[in-house]
Image (cartoon, rainbow, N blue to C red; front, side, top):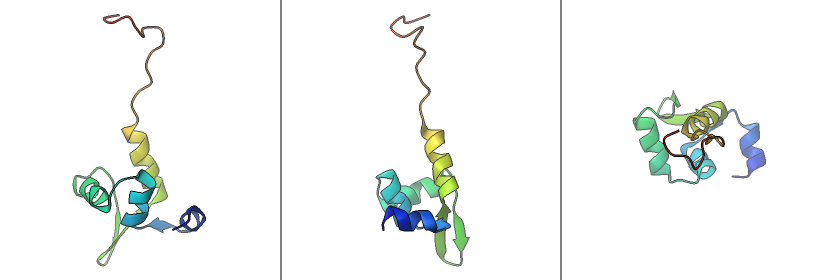
Length: 75
């Protein structure tokens, strides 16, 4: 699916999210099962919002290192 098409849609499929994150569909399923990414269930269909995917990505970010203490262990 093209990026332009994804941006126009309100919800994303598991496959869309997997492509965005560069992981397998199974990994997205496991993240959902583990409660790390929320979804919308409509009947048997599972959908995700772009905002939720963005929130998940932000939550996975590592903190920036402190340039003042970089290279000085223990300080």
